[in-house]
Length: 178
Image (cartoon, rainbow, N blue to C red; front, top):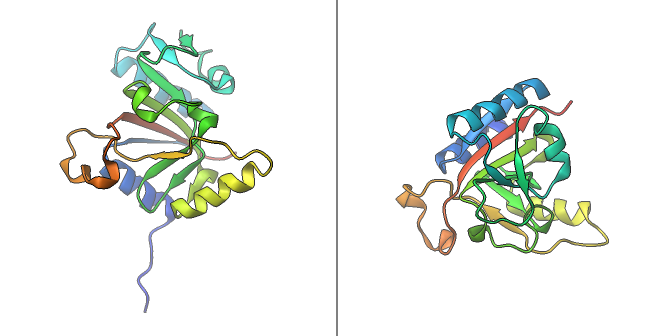
């Protein structure tokens, strides 16, 4: 009999945390707000400048906290963003110019807080790329890349596939689709 695979969410979370990411599952918006506030408190990021290009994220989180938002300062304390897809096969995040504009991942702040929903899971990078193609049929975004290395201490990930990419301190707030 073929081996029964774990659900896509479990496979992603295992690989993601194995890569050094910090995974926080949220059942509802209130829990997501609580986790966000705790991340800020834990890292002493209250009243620091953050980088965020997505105004809808600012609407979600700025009501509960005092965020000093920049759309230009790449030296901000952390980068608040979304992603296109969560890739289960390797625990990576698929992003594009919709999230990072024309910047390289290396040029962005060291700390990331990424907001995603359950519906953004995909099995493979190839399926994620097809999803981007479907989502933006008339105007395919540029600067499509993945973020996979979340731990600079992880020497196993320092192979040619991660060459040139810097490790990021990454928190993923995963919200159940309502």
